[in-house]
Amino acid sequence: MKEQLHALEQEALEKVKDAENLQDIQAVQVAYLGRKGSITEVLRGMGKLSKEERPVIGELANKVRTAIKAAIDAKKEKIEQVELEQQLQKEAIDVTLPGRPVHIGGKHILTSIIEEIEDLFIGLGYEVREGPEVETDYFNFEALNLPKGHPARDMQDSFYITNELLLRTHTSPVQARTMQSLDGNEPIRMICPGKVYRRDNDDATHSHQFTQIEGLYVDKNVRMSDLKGTLNLFAKKIFGEDREIRLRPSFFPFTEPSVEMDISCKVCAGEGCSVCKHTGWIEILGAGMVHPKVLEMAGYDPHEYTGFAFGMGPDRIAMLKYGIDDIRRFYTDDIRFLKQFHEA
Ligand SMILES: [Zn+2]
Image 1 (cartoon, helix red, strand yellow):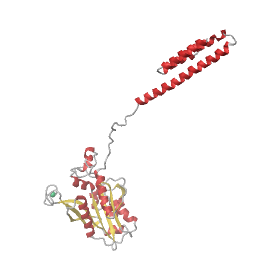
Image 2: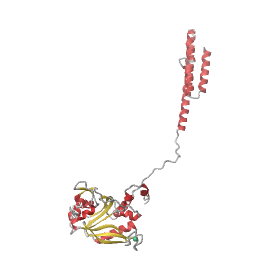
Image 3: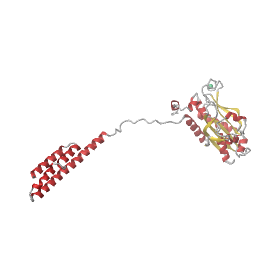
Image 4: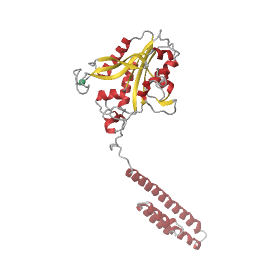
């Protein structure tokens, strides 16, 4: 029986050594240590042994069992280790592969123009103010010297929400709000950019939504020459140092006197061409000295304070600067159009 056990041990250890995977190992375990395994079979025959032999054989059988079990466990661990390594190798990520490109957006051309103009005026000591796009009739019209029934209101037909609430037709109400918030005793230097709305029929030069930037400067001794100097600087910084400006008399209800500012045509340098309709000049913005009545309504004493205001359309400025032929291009979100200006 001793020899039988030793032979089984040798045989089992040999098979463990030859096992190549977990199934092989499992088979060895069942064949030798299982309930119907060879070692178990041998132990069943112990009943036939003498009293003296039984513990000796029993001890040996246990030793053999333990040895085989230990060999099986060690081999199992080794195989698992190898299989894990193989799996890791199979699933490894090649970090040297090129990645998928990420599309980075850019600023809308109108945002870029507005920021360029903001930077210019911030440099002149102006602050940027914003106001609501849904505005009251009072701030949109009345506080700007446009009482109910004033004929100039017809030029700015809007989208009314109620009789007293509308989508603002210009950014001027931000000026009125700023002036009224200061109790008439502080100088003001501000610009207010933003979206405005008018009930226009959309075509190449009209859009029911567009952008505006207005500026306001109120202080003691502000003169028309200050306005002209500021506008001249603006025109040269935005359109080029070689541009000239001219002021023409105009009318706005909230300024007196009022002017329109033209810049010299870039295409013909003032000679006259189809772009400037053969005048040599291109209209850019409206401006003027703040109407005394507007100052008074905002709580400023017009005998002590004066000021100037101007308003321009970033849409129009972008169209002139980049030769864009249709205002609707800004709002129809054609990525092919917008992409051209991401480097601008
Ligand atoms: Zn021209």
